[in-house]
Every structure is written in structure tokens, then in C-alpha cells.
Image: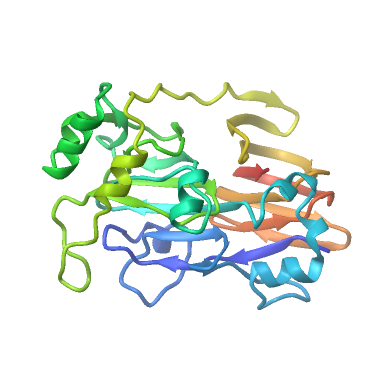
Length: 316
């Protein structure tokens, strides 16, 4: 086994921009890149290995070659690869949407639900997003707002700045606003229920599909409590900040200025470089990491990271 440097499947949704091309170096012949799935074994887009003997294989194929032990003991409670990690460039606002929990999604969609975390990598000065409801509502009130496309009347609009963190539990109504660049750590699911899309037309010239019935059944009708990341801790290699910790994943932010080792005996580790440069060393090999680099580190495998970079470290 060895660490896998990954390429990302890219999505060109209509609200996307060009920051992932211009600033992170992702290449595509498409006009825009809305999302880069930097760690993915999902059927809708798989990461591909860029280094070593498994170069050219998908992440799923590489895991099959390594064997399930590369995922670690903590992943055995999940029936399939548990994480999907993305970079999202919202040049325009996204639809108002919600994700179901595991029970509802398994029953109705054949895959698990989605709890996720957003880290604001960058944003425009006046950027804002939707984070839950601004008041508690009854089911009848919710149904009326969904049916009449006035759901934004009860949405909680929150101004954002670089470094903010939002924990989006399944059932939380939400929407990324325009001018926001986000790193998203989530359950490995692509089930999304659109509640409102502002009347926009898709690439086919038709309004994009809404999922009013499903959304009304899963939206949490109580306001969402504010979520704050932990205070950064000073270490010998820079600072370490816990972004999120739940039963589905743990995510930390390392502001690296020096060198440190990364190893988790019970889980694989995902490394996502948000800025700067670093070297990842293992055995007699070295990988050069830059902004946008994504690495899968097998469970119980030690690597050394050195340099000056901002890195999100995720595991389960």
C-alpha cells in the first residue's frame, strides 16, 4: 500500500465559475467548473490515481487491490466507502435544497443520506448563504411555502467570511450563495432535494426538477443553531483547528509551517491542500503537493508532510 495522489471528476453545473481552473489548476474543456470531487468513489464520478503502480485506476479499483484493511476499522460500520469531499465554486447562488437522513434515503433512494460540513475557503465581501430556517414552522406552513415558492421567506440568511464553518446536518434547509468557494466534507451520497431554484432553466432550456414532496417530508422545521469551529491550537508544526466531529466523519484544518507526521490506525486519511505547497514523504518516495492536491492515505500508514500550506485532514 502507498498514498494515492488523486485527480478529481469535474462537474459543470450552471451556477459554477472558473476559480477551480484559474486558481487551483483543474483542467477541463467545459466552460465552467462548479465542483471538483477531490475524494470520490461515487458512481456519479470517481477519483483516479495519478501516481505509482495503480496509476490510472479509480479509487474504488485501488481500494480493491489494497484490500479493505486500507480503509481501517472505523469504516466497517459503513457498507461502502463513507466519504465524498468536494471543492465548490459558486459563481451564482445554488438552489434551496435539503438532504435526507440515512433512514429516509435508504428507503426511497437506495443510498445513504447526507450530513455535510462546509469550510469557507474564500468569498466575496457581501456573500451570504442559507443555513436552516429563521423560525419554527408547522408542517402546514412549510408545505404552503414550498408549494407557493416562497420558501425564502422563512430561510435563515447568514453573511459569511473566509474561515467560517457550517455543519449541515441532514434535514437542514440550505443553499450556498453566489461568490463563495467552499470545501465540503460529506457522507458519500448524491441525493439532493431541490425546494426552489429561482425559476432558472437548465441546459435543456427547461426548469430544473424540484422535489417538493420529498423535501416537505425531511426538512427540519426548527431553526438551526449556529455552529462555530474550535479555536486553533498552536503546535510545533503550525496550528490545528477541529472543524467538525460527528459519527460520519472528523475534519481538522492544519495551517502547516514546518513538518508533521500523519497516521491513523483505525481510518484512512484524506488530505486536501487549500493553499501553499508541501512535500509528502513516505518510505523512499516524495509527492509534491500544491493548491488543490488530494491524497488518500491508507489506514495505519505513516506519512510526513513538510512545507507551508493550509490542509484539511479528514477521516472517519
